[in-house]
Image (tube, rainbow over all chains, first blue to last red; front, top):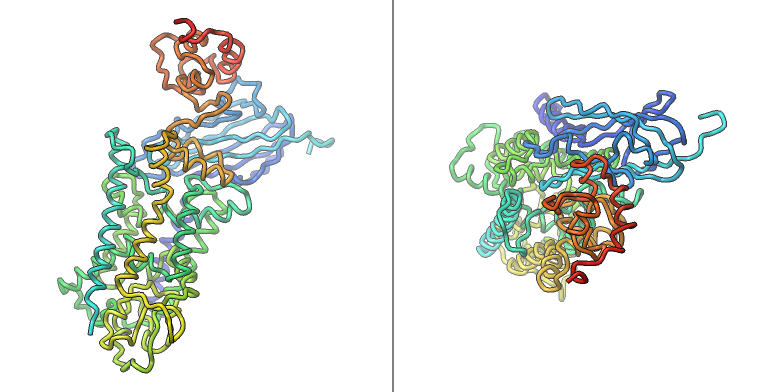
Length: 149
Length: 422
């Protein structure tokens, strides 16, 4: 394969791969023992009751002129806004770091305690006439093991 | 004798499709700007993107949920496209795809303006082929499958529509709306410039949906068939094929690159030597250019059936706008997208209160009057009743959704309605 062919092939690979890595929303969960796991909305995430976790959310703007600021992203738990001070929610939010904006990339992290057993979807919604975004992370909270694992 | 009906039919259908897609995009843009449009005007094409169906299928099968911004309507259009392809091959690519049409037009314009005089190109009608023709015409088309695999895998892993970031189709119709991503516009620009020299470069080398249809179309009964008894071996068909398929050799074209454009038939000097037909030699069905165009038109119209059902239900049955598609959508087991999808313009009737209901809707659902609800919740008379229940706490921090629900459940039911008061 001569240089010209290689160039064409590499260019096309680069273009298609660029899209692959330009994901809109990514979710990672840091467990109490410091492990970081990538979450996908279709999967169930196991948590242990009474333990504290950190959820990091980041996204890349989907449109050239994004009409919805990061702060308007909704995080809904049991149908209501996920905020600090709502201790009655099953995933009690302890603190939120606020949005960190870097050009078209935005990220935020939440520290929360799994305070009640059960299955709880956390909805992430960006309401927008251009399509918006909506996904749900499914947290399954179970009783902590005897060794606290 | 060349068939002169075919180019006219095809250009008419391609132009109609491009204009229809552009009109719907424009309607969506106008709706976003707050311009009132009749209820029957579709305003968004997301729902009829068949590749959206392909992209979400993996997660739907394994996890039971759609990825964001896709729904049952995407599966419907995917099924319509696959169904049409199983019967007629990749008619969608050759006759309907707006991006394919625009690439065709750019190439024809380049040819007419004699822009191609580079020594690296030969003068084949099928697009100016590099001297390294085998690589471009036989090897690179398989790159579509690599793109398809990469996108499906990444979509499955990331739970996002990753293709949208490089999608030149979206960029083509959204340049002027300011919503297309720079990368997708760069891809579109590259595709259009290449189209001056090479026929349909995106379709041939990159299009992941073309890869799906190409493979599906291999088993289609209706395809281009050659009568070796009539064929004079002039190879006019080979030169005409935009995908550089050797039409003059096999008796039946089952190449995954064939887009059923039928330009081989158009170019054939011997009537009947090449036909778009079903198998057999006796009573086989032969599709004339007009019938092929009709099949493509039916395929196009079938994409709009979910929209038509939606609009009819809205206009005639007085169902809430969005109800039909939402029903289709929820039938797929996905409720999480309901609130942000472009079809959820009004909340569907619900039994209990939900955070996405407005105060007006909550009052109606509870069988009462909104003014009473405002009193009950301690909100001022002039409070915007279009505010959603879960958003009230943005104005009054203590009035969370839970607080509102408890308040309504305990107090609203016992209050007399305004009709009773009268």
